[in-house]
Length: 408
Image 1 (cartoon, helix red, strand yellow):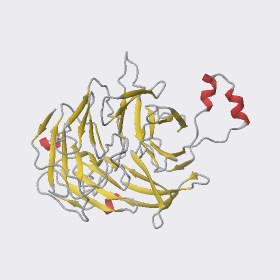
Image 2 (spheres, rainbow, N blue to C red; image 1 turned 180 degrees about the vertical axis):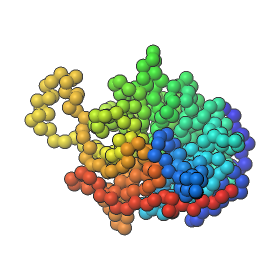
Image 3 (cartoon, one colour; image 1 turned 60 degrees about the vertical axis):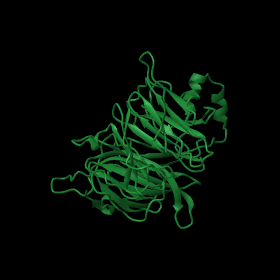
């Protein structure tokens, strides 16, 4: 890895009120949000021309750490939106596509990774950190291979390659604190706690490299501050870890395998298995996992379309439970996973991200479920916390209708 010259020092700051741009490639505005990359179908072009695509096809999307904003990456730049309540985009064009846009809460720092193109700015090996308040490049780093994922919190910047993870100090010159090598992580799977306060725990999780041709079924949990301390969680039985997410306070970790049928929740840092949820019996790709702020609910978006909401509580024991408790563990385990408490509709094979927020924005009451999808929609639902079932649609927005692009 080699670090290129920084044009300014890194600095956090509150995001500004309106869109603004900076001349040249990689223009940015004063925004905040979260990073993620779309790896499947169901893409949409925002503002098509007569040929059907002006280059603004969605290739990445995600929420920021506290789900107050979300970002989309496109073939011509990126855009950020406020959530709860929804507000239109700050859409800034760049010389090439933006595949990953990872922002730090609602501060002025944003991390961008391109999707490849004729310019060196577009290289998927290049990571750029911008200070959007100063409208300046804060840091520019070139890695040995393509950047597959990026995660940030207030103290750490985690950069995932196929065979390594680079852990940087977030601030100053992006000091490299650790490089975890000899990995085999083609999906770029990683999770990092939000750690919003200086005394909050900071953990990182990634799949343990497979041995003897076996899938990466275990998770390595690392203290993201000292990097050295770690434990291994035996997460899945027969398939590789494909998705992970921490709760906002860092006390829970949810994981799913490439089968996508069972979701497991572990206590952190003890690694005790707390819950096992059944998403479905058919194999699916898990696109997104998210806990609510109270650690009462877990939302799961998958390639099957339906978003499942699970409740993190054990049902009252029944006579049937007592009967199955005496069966051999191999037989009884088939009855253990809990079913979804609530569901929300989605589109099959359209990549999506989920998060929670308030249902009633005026009073900040009730449980709301937010879904952003690669077909260009933001939808917000109300979850009935008393009886569950089908979530009620509260509002939906076509992102193309709320996006005005600023050209370089």
